[in-house]
Amino acid sequence: MQVGWIGLGEIGGPMARRALLAGHRILAYERGQAVKELRAGGVALSRDYTTIAAACEVLTICLFNDAQVKAVLLDQGALAAMRPGSVLVLHTTGSPELARQLQDAAPEGVAVLDATFSGSPAQAEHGTLTIMVGGATEAVARAQPLLASYAARVHHVGLLGQGQVVKLLNNLLFAANLRFAAEVLGLAERQGLDPGTCARIFQGCSSASTAGALFADCRNAGSHARLPEQGRRHCSRQLAGTGPIKCDAGAGDCQLCTRLIAGKVRRQLSHSGRGSSGGIGQGSGELRHFGQRAERVVKMRASIRARQSLHHGAT
Image (cartoon, rainbow, N blue to C red; front, side):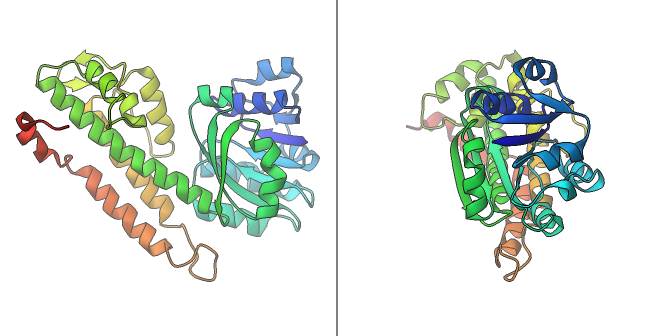
């Protein structure tokens, strides 16, 4: 398959490398930390977005946020240059509404998929990402061989925009779990326990979670359990587009991170549907109100009144 690739960053680079190893022919935009390696591996490079878009069967976008996606596809003309029968795959986590706007603006015969992913750079490197796809079934089938080259699980979740909704809900749940993990490990430290040891123990218990695993290498640091560098990078990706923040990830920092993540999700979900005639249906208002409620919840101190009964124990 002839693939156009825009976005060779921390995760986009390993994804493109997996696609190349699977036998796909790649023409990529010449920018990003993986350019040198991919050039040596046989990836063709270009500095012109329209040239890349016009040459491919599938155009893959793996950029930082909605603003960058719009700049490349609309302002720089990449979307208009796509040929009939091709598929635009949006890997950027952003607004569900943007995916539908791009479909409206696309040339006739061009299909758009929002194909958000969950996973780390290491998972991209090993081809074990999880992808949530929204869009037409036929377009998903055309893009499947490419997606399968870097994802172990590809879920077609529904209509265009719904892949973004699933990813945003995942991010919201991650934010809540991160907040609770920080609170509990801070409590463990105040009880005289090592938070890193507790975090590692919890990962083998019923409380295990991705958010909790980020603390598994944390160290004692005054009154807070701090995230290690890997965890800070993970949160920085979740915080994309929320404004500058220095993640030093003590419990207080995690409270700020969760508020920012939840706020970002709420704003993106507020544009998640067009009503019953637009495809997403009547759930958009419910999603918007849910996002608002969730943002309020994570602003509160975790309902750790249970800490008052810590001495009673739990199994």
